[in-house]
Length: 170
Image 1: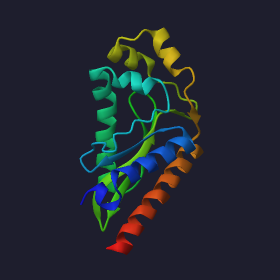
Image 2: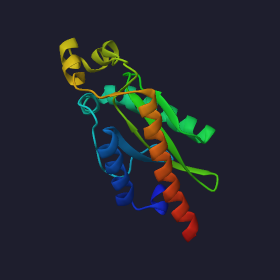
Image 3: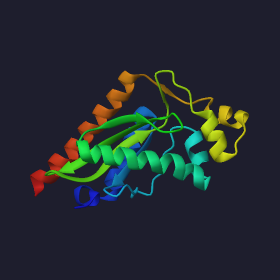
């Protein structure tokens, strides 16, 4: 079973747009192997797209945290709220149908509870100067732990709606 069996890619893209507009996070849907499939990129900050432009930085930060949260969400069958190596919030809600993990929907970006980005790591991976990293992070949104949990609950509710609709029709 694939994520697009539940909802077409355009439907998942609409959910990503909704999460992005509501909470200001970079929203994303991934299939069971961790690949995004909606072809939509919504950035909740300026640092993340800059990281993605540098091959090793995007791989070293984004791919690693994606693999970690996917594994945890799959094994524990529960939402994961953590931070990536750059220090930014990551939320991953598993999409499970009849006990089968088929993907995840979530959001990332922003800083939790007054945290600061891991500037030293970002500088080393990207070659950006301290001033460049500071500028890219200067308007980064702050989230409390309560905010992060509210985002997670909202995404969980949306995923539950999609799964219920699928199960009702099959």
